[in-house]
Image (cartoon, rainbow, N blue to C red; front, side, top):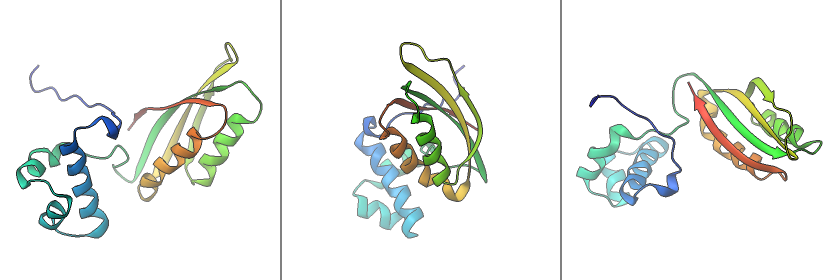
Length: 147
C-alpha cells in the first residue's frame, strides 16, 4: 500500500535540523503573525526546504475545539504521588475523563489517564507534562494517543 499514510509521535530533539527549522518558521508565523517569507528569512532556511515539509509537520497538540488524549504513567507505589499528578492536571484546567490505575507490581504502579483540553489550552499542556515529569516518584510519562 504505497499511499497509506503513517503517523508517529517523535521527540523534537531527534528531528533533523531542517525539520526543526520548519517547525520554528510555523511557530513564528502563528505567534508573531508575520509572513512566511519573513519567518523563513529570520530562521535562516531556504524557501524550498520550508515548502517541501510545511504541510507534513503539525504539533501534536493542534486540532479541533476539544482534544482528548491519554497519558501512561509509571510511578513509585507511595501515597500521594497520584494526588500530586492530579493536582498538576487540575491547576492546568484540563478535564479528567478517566483514570485507570493498575495493581502495583514490584513497588511500581501504572496508570492511564484520559484528558480533555480546549483548543486554547493545548500549548500549555506541554508545560503541565513537564511539571508531572518533575514530581518525585514519577518514573515514566508517555502520551499514548489522542483523537
